[in-house]
Length: 453
Image (cartoon, rainbow, N blue to C red; front, side, top):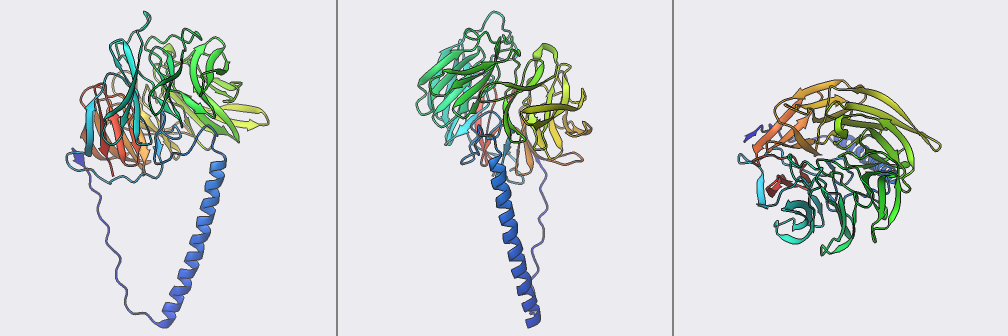
C-alpha cells in the first residue's frame, strides 16, 4: 500500500509579559471577536434552518450517520460531518470483519446498526440483513427469481438495485423486476408486486437495476410500462397510488430535487431525462438524452444552482440542463452537451463547480473533472481503473473495478491520491457505503467492514 503523509505544522509560540494597556486592548479585541463569532453562529443557524425548510419532504437528514438508500441520505453519495483519518496504516485500513456473500452488485444500505443488501443463489434472490458491528446474519428473505428467456446475464447475475430502508420497512427490487416490502425487524413479507407481469415494464436484457425511492408515505419505482413509466405504491399495503407516463425504462435510479420551492422527482429514462410531481406523477418537463440500448445508468447529479448533470456511455455523452420554475411551469434550458465525458455505470459527485467521475465504456476509463457550468474538462487522472466514489471530510473514497481502494483529495488542478491499497480480488462494481467512519464494501463473493477514522 502507498500513503502520502501530511506534514505536521508547528505549535503556537508562548507569549511574554504584556502591559496593562496591551492586556486591556486584548480584552476588547477578544470581546469583539466573541460577539462576531456569536453573530456568525446565529447567521449560520438561520441559513441552516432556511436550507432545511427547502429540503424535499421525501428526503430526511441522516440520523446517526445512516445510509438508508442508494447514494446515501440525500442520494448524492456524500456523508456530512464524517471525520476521516488523514492516512491509513501501511497494511491498509483496519478490517473490522469480513465474510462470504453470494453473487450480486447491490450496494449496502445501513440504518440503526444494521446492513441491508441483496445477493443471488441459484434460482433465488435473497434480501439479507446483517449486524453492522459483526457481519452476522440477522434475517434473510428468499424468493424465486428465474431469468426470462430474453435476459443475458453474462456480465453478472445481479441483483443490481439497492434496498431502501424506511421507519418500518425494507423495499427491494430484483433483476427480474419483483418489488418486495418486508418488515424491517423480522424480514417478514408485507406485500409484493411483479413490475413486468402486472404492469408490462420495459424488459431489460441485463436485468432490472433501478433502486426504489421514498416520498412521504409512498415508495416510487421506475417501471417503463405503457401508462406506467413511473409508479408510486402505498408503503403500508402496496396499493397503487399513481401510475403515469409512457417513457421506456433505463438502468438508472430516480432522485428527488427542489426547483425554486417545488418538489420534483427526476428519472433518467431510456431516451429522456424527465421531471414529475412526486405526489401525482404528473409530467412537469422532459428533455431528450439518447444512448444506445437505453443504457442511461448513472444517477443524475443536482446542484443548488438548478443545474442538472446527466451522463451515459454508448454514444450518450454528458449534458447539463438548467431548470427554472415560474408559476406552475418549469422551463428547461440546455446549458451544454458533448461526448467528452461518458459515464458508464459508476456514479458521479459534484463538488463546487466540478463534477467528478470515471469516463469510458469499453477500455480505459480515466477519472475526470468537468466544469458543470461550461462543460470544459478540468483534468483527467489515470491512477485508478473505473471507480465508484463517496465524498466525506473534503476527500473522495474511491473503489475501482479492480478492487483497489483509495483516499484522494480533489483539486481544480488534479487528483491527489493520499492512500491506495489492494482490497478485494476480482470484479468490483458495487459503490461503497459510509456510516460515520465505518466503510462497508462488497464484490460478487465477499462483504467486509473497514475503519477509516
